[in-house]
Structure formats: structure tokens, C-alpha cells
Length: 470
Image 1 (cartoon, rainbow, N blue to C red):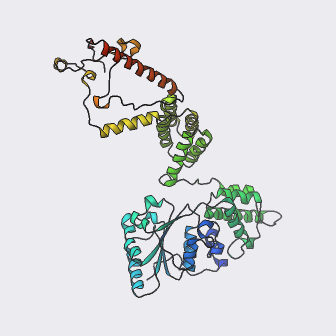
Image 2 (cartoon, rainbow, N blue to C red):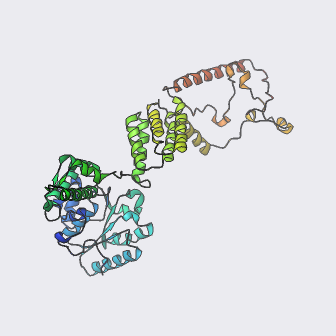
Image 3 (tube, rainbow, N blue to C red):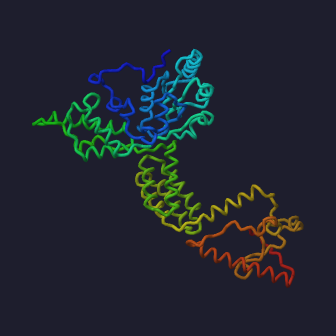
């Protein structure tokens, strides 16, 4: 049974191949691999398991162009096991079951074990992933899944617990440069037969522009090389084709920034923005903001996060922070993008530069906790309005003291339910305006305590305020 494995296709002579440069230059041995030394360098456990054909189920997680499929190809070439590969984009549950049945039959006959490579495994739904589980448990298959998404969220927990996750990092600029240089000098699979002259600045620009993705780097190099060859052919005095920075820039145009509005990078970058502002780093804040805006993130989503931050991490240390954040939201809504980007940047820089306090956030969390845990005490009678005669007869409003009639507009009156009296949810910091707020609240607490003590020493009837004000 043939499933159209990626690795079972007949070889095509390189000279006649029309495959993209990135595909032609894909490594087929460990020695050709560039990067990921911490995983597949000599004497590393993963490489050792592959070379000894003792590999167990693994998940390869990393950004595009970091070598996940390439490593699978190397495993296919090195391992003695039966190797089957298909893409989650094209395969369905029917194909999965066929592979499982064949793997079970092979194992029962004592033949080679089956290594199953599933590219973009995160695209399989839970039911499809569940189909792998029994065969992984019995050892009928060894699963190799490749994903650009966080396996914690995208891979079945039971399957994940039976697999080792290996994280592949984005390639460095120097590693991309090595790959590009190899493609320029390889006369069999690469561009070596074109004898292309490449300026160092052009090569460096392409390597940076690739953003850690070898495939992007090779595609850009191929575009730039084609442009250089075409320009040389059109010249009055034809000479060697030369790829300079100008041609490289034309090929690059505008890099697609590494950002997925529905994936992990979305949450990573918004987290970086939030934490940079919290740590009072306006430079980092505006950088992460720009990363999101330039990659096409919804500007109102960013504005909502800024508004949240203004209350959660600044609060009353600088009450203007919330106004600035709300103003940025209104500006983005009013003028749209790209003009709204500076309003977002202004807000992010202001929030990063403001004094920090999470006292409001903490106060609400503690109050909400008590609201859920404690008995829902009724509102004390003295805090209730009494708009009807019956309510007055039931003592609604009795004992209420109108603060504006008291010295300093502070009444010695408890406003929490009896079971929660004495709780202090809001504890201001000594940063920003909260320093003055804290001083004021402390003075009021002392004043209330003194008046209560005085009332205990000299008890008298306290008049009930006939007011319907809340």
C-alpha cells in the first residue's frame, strides 16, 4: 500500500529539476544539517537514537524553516525501520487507519517497525490524533509529529505524554549565511554553475531578512540570483552576473514578520509588550508594539490590552494612565491605521514610563475572592435607602451618617458587612499618587478609630439622616 510518501518519490537529475532551490538544497545526511547542534550534534541523545534505530515517538516543535521536515528526511534515510510520511493538510482519518492497520500487520509478522512522520500534526483534530494513540501504546508505530504550534495546546494530552518534545530554534544569521553560501557554491544542486558574484552586504541582508527561516533565505537568494542573471544578460557589455544590495532589496521587498494572530507567537509578543511596560522599559515596549502593528495585528486588540494594563499595573499611582490608554483607543477608532500607530506608541511609552502599582488589581482580586468564598451577607441596614414608610419601620437607613455633615467629611461608620469588618482590600503603594492616597487613608482610619473610641466613652443617640442618597 502506497500513501504517497514525501520520501518515496523517484530522484530527478538535478540539472533537469525544476524544484525550488530550497528543496534542491535540503540536507539528506546529518553532516549536511546546519543548526540545532544541541539536539542533533554528535553524541547527542536524539541523534544517537536515530542512528541506532531506537527512536521513540517524538514531537518536533519550531518555527517554519528550522529543519523539522529536513530532520524527518534524514531519519528516513538513516533508519532501518519502515518509514511512512504524510501531511496533516492532505490526509484524513481513512489514511490514518490504513497506516495503523499496515503497521500492526508488519509488527505481527515480525517485519520492520513503522516510523510515521506527520507534518503539521497540529492540523489534525482530536479524533484524528486519537487514532494514533493505541498503536503508539502497543509499539506498532513510532510517531514523529512536526508542528509550528505549541504542542501543549495543539496535541492530544495523552499522545503528548507518550512523546518526547524537541524544540527547534530559529536559525541564527550566521547559520543562514552558511546555508546560502553552500547554495552559491554547490554546482550540482545549487547555483554554483552560474558563477554568481554576490556582494557581502547583499548576502548579509538576505540572511537577516530570512528571520531564522532557511527556506525564506534560499527563496530570496534564488529570486535575487535570477534578477542578477537577467540584468547581466541585458547589459551592453555582458559580464558575470552580480547580486548587489539593490537587487537583494528588490527581492526582499517587505518581510512577512513572524507572527500568527491565532497562534502562540501572538500570545508571546503581547506578553512581551505587557511585561516590558510593567518593567518600565519604554524602548522594549514600543518595539514589541511595532512588531504587532507591522505584522497586521488588530489595533483595537492592542488598545484593549493597553487599557487593561493601565488599571492592572498602574492604577491610582497615575490615574491619567487610564485616560491616555482610552484616548489611544479612541484615536485608533477615529483615524484608523496606519496613522493610529503613533497613538498606540504614545500610550505604550506613557504606560511604560508611569509609576507602577498593582494595588487596584490586587484589591479587586481579594474582594472578588471574598465575594465567592464568604457568606453573602445582606447589606447592613444603615446603608440601605428607605423610600417607603414600611422600609423606615423596618429600620432601613437607621444609623446612617451623612459624610458631608461630619468633620473632614468622614463618618465613623462601617460600610462592610459585619463578617468582613476590618478587611483591607486596597493597600496603596508608596509610588506615584498612591503615596498621597495612602497617607490620606491612614489619616482617615485613625480619625474613624478616635471617633469610635470617643463614642464608646460618651454614648449618645446618633441622628439618622433622612436622605435618599446612595
